[in-house]
Length: 261
Length: 263
Image (cartoon, rainbow over all chains, first blue to last red; front, side, top):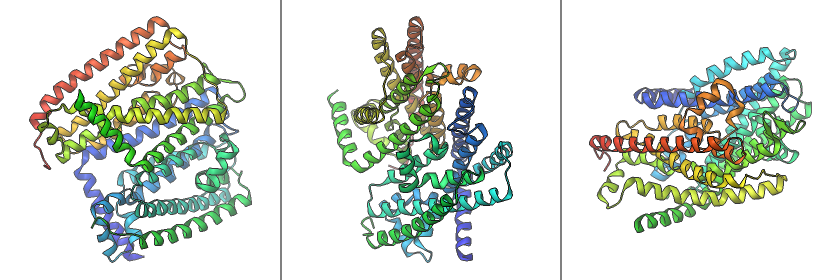
């Protein structure tokens, strides 16, 4: 574990060096991310100038969904950015080097690039989460907060599993750059409370692509709206997705043909 | 003209070669469309309206924006930056064709293909969801078509202009990312801009992006008075002319900076 932390730290130092040497890119990317965040925030804020409820949720409750979506989404982009590079690695033959390295190939493929800008971006998101959390119109107990954090961790494990599935697909089916973007676009379903969607859409994004479990369940737990069955469902999904993704990754590696080397 | 037609046909074939990617890309589009549809459905469920828009108008806006995004927002002009940085741009300088024209032919090929898929997606989803659309006034049809054509050209020219930043720096991706998100929101691709009201709406209306999605859809929905339609089209044409002039200036200066690095 210590060895992997040291490898990750070294890779992150390299990433910082890269960002510092590409200052224009780094600054404009960060501003771009802030602009995207600010516009959606503004849109959601504006909606509540016309109405006081969005599918039974008030302004701050809806904002809490949006901020939790951002927290999970940005966290994954910060620490799992390597998965976006795998296609290039395979095309250029670099993936063969990754397999030959004395570190776990899966770890390398997921974490070889740390997005420092997203780590910076996490700070205002966490600050806003605390601020909006204090504005929520209900009494938040310690148990609610613990459940929220537990389900957040569960959601993050599922997100890691989804990233493993996308990189396994990249190894198996080279023409797959849109898989990761399909996941990213699916995540946007979690920007808003799931009650706005139809039953069919909710079924798909709970049980087939578990975005609602990842984002909405922690928020519902904090708001005291999640049942014990919901909590158990999240745990079961975490285990099934994580171990299923690992098995799928192993299968994909066995089929890797090293065609570009 | 024949060589640009050949580029158009080759680009079609290239797009259709990676069919799985194309399908995944369209699936992403459908997810965004569904998200926006359900947001507006939820907000208009009880009163049947939101701000100055009826439910039918909002659905028309969301589905119309999906179609216009497919026609207007291209990706080919983005490649210009990487072509300049990796040296492949030099190939265009040696060939008897205009780089701007070649990229525009590629862009038109991509747009026509994406429009085809967007029309099918829109019709199928509208049928499945039981969505009804507002009809435009017959007199507004020609301004709408003209506006969409101008928007297609304006987006391409602005995007090409931003890519030309690569003549001066290898770091053109960040500015492009910022440009694209500013453009996505300021164009009204996600929601009608006038729900923002006040100063923000006034500020956005001063930008060229305002005319890309929001303006043609507002003409379609009859939200803009007849006299102001032609004024708006005039302003959009002026933005296009200004951007084309800037491309001319930047191109001449950029070529002097171009070192052919990466050949």
